[in-house]
Image (cartoon, rainbow, N blue to C red; front, side, top):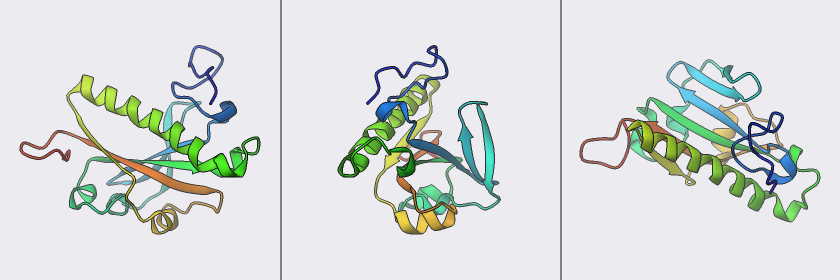
Length: 152
């Protein structure tokens, strides 16, 4: 993992990535569609005009959540990483990003739930990902439910 992952150092990120390769892409699943986060321009780019929120996990609340983030490992960017380490390095990078979202949500009074239990193949198909891309985690963000840990 690269230790030079600060935004202030020439376009770096706030989460580590193996060899600074930014191996995780973040997608925002919203009611109006699926968007890929563009960190260079700090904006969302429409990937599909389809509501894929219900595909981001098995729990009932995911389809009704205001926002589901999907963390996608881009294995094609891990050329300098031994193949046996791709999954480990991608999981570590995504885990750091998930934690950043949890910290923000805690400071903003929002709830968040991360999930690794998802149908990766089906979600990848609905997201129109290529063979080098694999959804590895999803994270629901919303207002905390009154009597439940799942955000709404």
